[in-house]
Image (cartoon, rainbow, N blue to C red; front, side, top):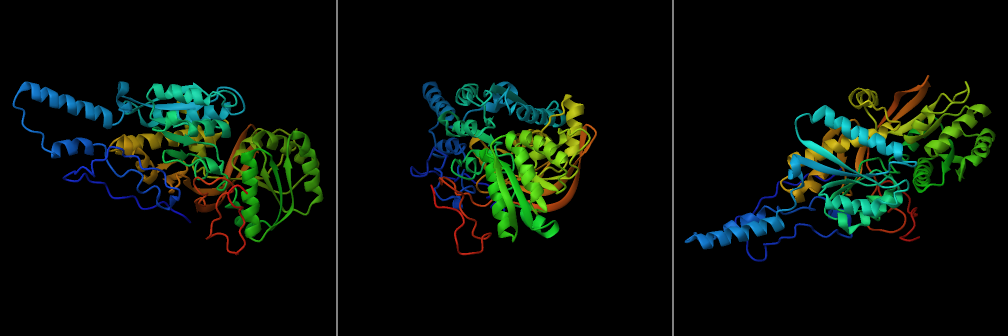
Length: 466
């Protein structure tokens, strides 16, 4: 498995600065090859600017005019180069939430906010204050660029990007937010470790690789080597299906078939095809809504094969209702560790029980990441490095990032069973740490093949743009 580089030693300010070393810009350009990225992203402290001035030896103040002049110069330099002091505004740290208040991702946004608020109430009473500055991104995140610009004017230091691909892309590409730390919840590979990677961008959620590929070898060893794959045509679901198919085939399995639906009207056809197949397993990369309808059709048809998929299908299973008949064995690949405790905490602390617990966990862990970064930072330019190298413990275990700012998750398989109006989860297997392949920062096209994972000589992934 891939693990993040060792955290660098604390950088020290040199005793003397010559003209060549007095560099004010502490942001290094993003390398085209990320093998060196991460450990050296922030190599200088802005506090070195003040040290440099004092080490040059400002002459003694012989008169009040000289003293005032020198103090004015120092004040100007410090205001220019010491970085914005967001955390000092009214004693709070401003965190921008660019999330939809309506549309298909509104519940996910509500859950994330609920988890963030839960952390505040549980751990920050009369302590460090986190102020949420909300901006409605629109039902399809159409307002994302304007919302980000407005947040910048309000002095936020951290931003949660919108959930859709377009909304995230707009937030990542906007120059107005170059100096803030951005957090991504969409699982698509290109948004963090791939094409749109950036020094100040981190992913809170498992990506499409982590939501599917680790499951394949376990299924072949414990359930069977014949799978039927059914999925949606959304980019996220399609990429989950692609990674699972790749992993299953490389692990020695084979497919009865793979169907990609373009709407709920095709689910009956998918169920009929599964009934005629010899598949031992069903892997679902359907969206939550489609999976809910799929379960109903499968129960009516008497389909008995166990179904596996990413964590989001667990929410669809929980809310399905098939008039007395119900598919009793749905298992999900997830990074959740303490779901019952979190769900109970949400009910008790903020009177909310969000549908998507994964999103609530992301909000909870986001707050813990920000609080730790603020406590450990030397200056505002050191926050990115602190986030990448710190190991904060959250509901999904240690919060660790690789060099591309993808999370390293301890993944597990949980069986989801419906009990009345509630769902019950039981851990079936612990799969251990799951890191991501190097998706190829800045590349356009398929992710770069992982040499250590793919043993044969034939390239699996296409070349950039292919």
